[in-house]
Amino acid sequence: MTRRWSMRIVWELQDRALTFLELQRECDGMSSSTLILRLRELAEAKLIIHEEDGSYKLTPLGAALPTAFAPLVLWAEQWAETTASVPTHEPDSTA
Image 1 (cartoon, one colour):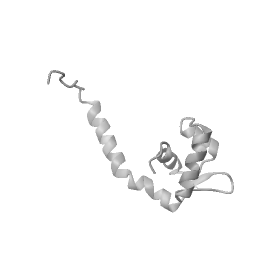
Image 2 (cartoon, one colour):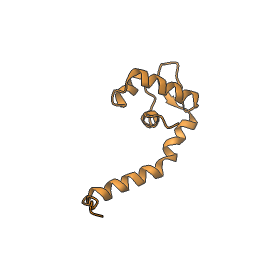
Image 3 (cartoon, rainbow, N blue to C red):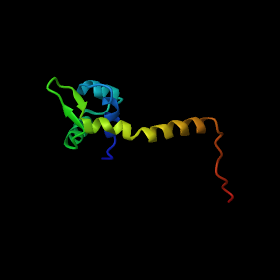
Image 4 (cartoon, rainbow, N blue to C red):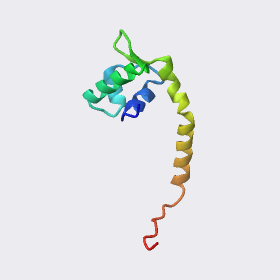
């Protein structure tokens, strides 16, 4: 599943269940149609469930994703720290 917004939805649900409107707000106001489609895809993939109270939450399988991505998150944080302190050099156009 490499669709845009899918991992963001999983990320937002990692600590708590959220309603549709809460998810939309947390995902920077993504369009309703996109959110509906992504929620349907994530549910079909058994990564989220739609609760009777209207909220969405991660399944145990979905809850394992943030842990699986932890090494990538750590790398990204280290990369951001390193590149923030290193001046950017333009490639030499004469080469």
